[in-house]
Image 1 (cartoon, rainbow, N blue to C red):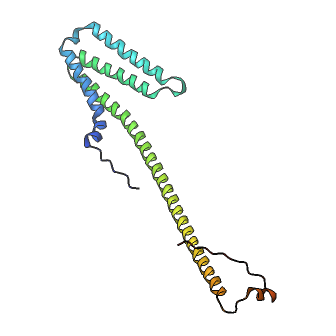
Image 2: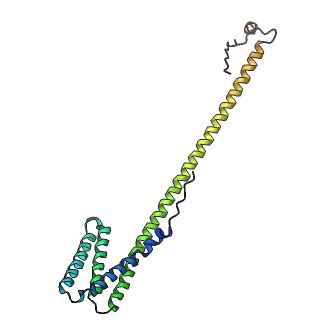
Image 3: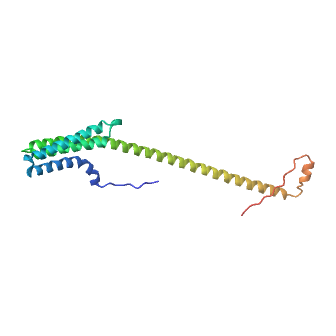
Length: 203
């Protein structure tokens, strides 16, 4: 059975590849906008960002060290939030652009490293799933071929049996119409008695 091929749009393919850079760039831009609006001289906002970043990192550590190996998704989200807050804080409170851009480059590299690991796992799972589907399809097609061959064999056997029965019925009928054919005489001669056969054929 032919399955329809689904062609994904190029934006759907490229979106996961640019998502880490877009995320870190967005945080950097928001941090610089915050800097332009006076965040550089706001001690309260700086303390709030530090507390939030530390809290997110702590939550990520607890999630990673949880029972049964921890929750990887929750831990990754918490650490990503902590890193985003730290990057936003540095971008917001730095005088120049050198340190924010350096942290942005490091954060982008780390994000792509984590994403590449996820992409490899996802690709491996996709390949394994496709291989499993292919094996099941081949097994199903093999079973269909065996069933078809078995059905054809049964049809041929039934056809040959019908032809043999027709030939036997015609032979018995022809023998009964021969002149001088006497089943009683054959029985007296010591031959076994022929059973009476009632042949009805549907047309």
